[in-house]
Image (cartoon, rainbow, N blue to C red; front, top):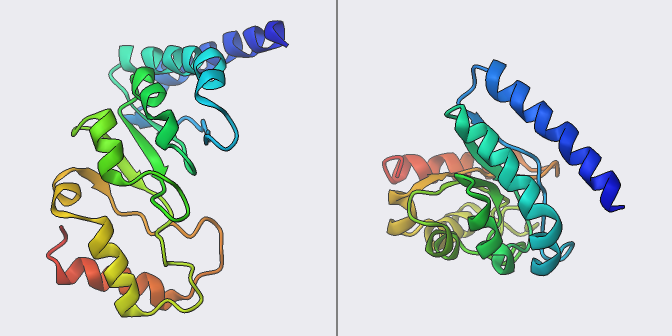
Amino acid sequence: MAELLDVMHSVRKREYEILARRSPVEAFIPVENTSSNLTSPSVYRRHSLPQIRDYVGILHARGKKVILHMCGLLKDLLPEIRDTGADGINALTPPPIGNCTFEQAMDALGEGMINLGGILPGFQDPQATRPSIHAHLDRLFTPRVRRSNVLLWAGADGLATPLERFRAVRDWIEERGGR
């Protein structure tokens, strides 16, 4: 298994070198898709961290930003995520779906981290209403979070979602001046 992982890692490094050299995009989102319900911190440190750190290094050497796609239960993996050197997280999912708030991620990864927020709590609740969605957003997007590098992403993760819920998010943003 270790030999197979080494071969795969070698091929992926070449892939990232080509992408970093040839792609005009400024930021990459490697699909790591790790969660502590799948990978313990010790297993992550041993098997994933060195590989992801290499990919981040390759992309950074070409001036690219790296935003890891990681969703789910991330709170216990924050030190390892920090050690990858990545610039941010895509799909950080706050409780009750995930277990890490935006503030916890900022505390562990730094104020400058890029955060593309994940599935919003209450967004998929069958009983969700415009006021309940606004209340969830008010709790999640504190003044500190609004001042940070957070992109509000009303992720539905492929789930059928009534258009009115997206409109409620849009209206919440407009009512608060986009911040």
